[in-house]
Image 1: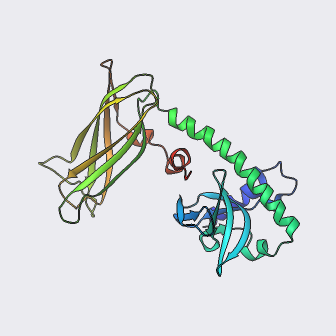
Image 2: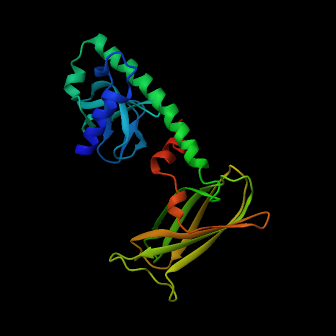
Length: 259
């Protein structure tokens, strides 16, 4: 928490040096993974990762609940004040005179727009940074396939950053049980599945693999390695899949739009 509050202080006071009065730059950070509303009367539908920063534009009491009006990825949302770390209290923002509240709104919207453009440039760079490696992993997960059968499945979403069309991809997974030992199948800890293209340059593809492991003992898992074959017959082998995986923040910025 101390690290989060220190970062909030640095952003509030130094990053937006263009502001006429830095006291109107009010930044918050999510205490935990949570959801935001696009309107006070709507449902909580937009996911916010823990420690994600938002630009606070107002403090509102609605139906006996305290909300911050915030800007995130250049859009306005509402989030309960209890879910946000902020150097300025809800009460202090709520009790400000109208002219200062207006200044906070203007700064929040402006700062969010500037940061959104900056973050989008970084996100697109991250998306295409793996051109040499041959693949970008956008998102992947593993889950219990069914409450009625023993089995753990995996989903994966990839992006082709290269100028060549992908023909096949082989993903090799390793699963670990609750005590950290590798889960074996017929004496091997590696489970390899095949993805069939084509995946054109700059295209995205998603794959769902049922029963990668025929057990519910998989507590955690990782992608051990990846082999990619292109339509021209060439191959790429990726021995460190983590290095080609974009962060959850970048994924959310690029693909999780509530429009």
